[in-house]
Image (cartoon, rainbow over all chains, first blue to last red; front, side, top):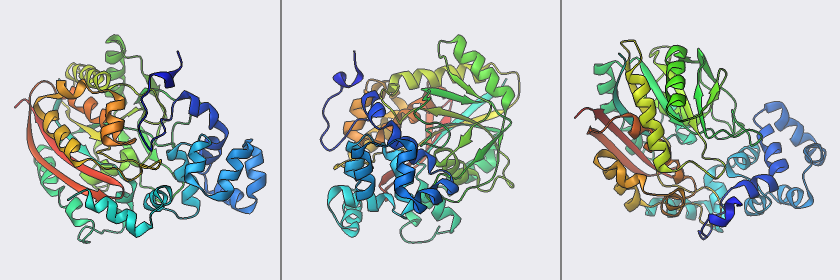
Amino acid sequence: MSTHTIQEEIPGTVIFDGRMAMKGYALNKMCYSFNSAANREAFRKDEEAYMDEYGLNDQQKAAIRARNVLQLIDAGGNIYYLAKFAGIFGLSVQDVGAQQTGMTVEEFKEYLRKQGE
Amino acid sequence: MAEIIAGLTSSHIPAVGNAYARKLFDDPYWKPFFDGYPPVHQWLDEQQPDVAIVFYNDHGLNFFLDKMPTFSIGAAPTYENKDEGWGIPTIGTFQGHPELSWHIIDGVVADGFDVCTCQEMAVDHGFTVPVQLFWGDREENPIKTIPICINTVQHPLPSPRRCWEFGKAIGRAVASFPGAEKVVVLGTGGLSHQLDGTRAGFINKEFDLMCMDKIVDEPETLAKLSVMDLVREAGAQGAEFILWMAMRGALGDKVKELHRNYHIPISNTAAGLMLLECGA
């Protein structure tokens, strides 16, 4: 039995299971490589060549070019590895959260704060 | 025999590592978080534990999707923190306790938990942030550590009950170790948070406070939750609560809550701190 058949739908949430892990393998492997400063630099120097080296598919390449986190997740990206990609551009998890929810960063921070009231 | 004297919980948010490095202890944003820790520091100063068993999850430093073990136990003399790619300053070497590690490995495998064993293990913020929060710079506080990594990256994740039982097996193993070590067990991560998807930023104070209450005297209630319950109620990364369940299992039946702190938000997360003393 495949793993995702037993999962319920949770709105706004993609469960990163085996299906997604297979789909996003190349993309996540590239992002995992960004643990190394030399690899981050190599990506900055020639993004297209770097994506080719890791065998990203067209959907993954387009999402990387767009710096679009929801598209990256849809292409199989896992947030822990994507965070390393976002880090190349100095983006925090609030920046990433704001982008995904369509809020400004200030609005997103206020949304977080209000949940503590 | 070695003895587990208490459990400690702490969030392991990477931004804390940056704030710690910049000493933002009295900054208005950070103060309600950092102010939770001195009572635990005082207790640690009094008790002087020798070893910290640290349940944490790797966030893509030591493990990639090529090999993703469910339960991994460090069995190294030292553990290194390495570059995670997004700017958290790396901190020094952590001392291990390989004899106790192997004793635990022997014990839990005999008990039915077939773990991955690691003689080299890079530890990320999931491990380093809580250890730094509790012990500061390791040069001054040479606590020995045993990192135990539980997969929270790729579903299926082990259930809260499975993690609770895993913790119990570790507790039994420690109790049979022929040494005089005083051991504390850390449950790191959580509480509610979600980083990914259009639900990013989700926090659930009511659920978190329920978990903090029940984990003291009614962990059985929490063991009935599924991983999907945690994802729904605590957010995609709130599933890290399984690490707290592993800690609670290691503490034995009765614990006494000596201290807690809860604060929203730190980064995208509800931060929970607890000190649970064994044998109440």
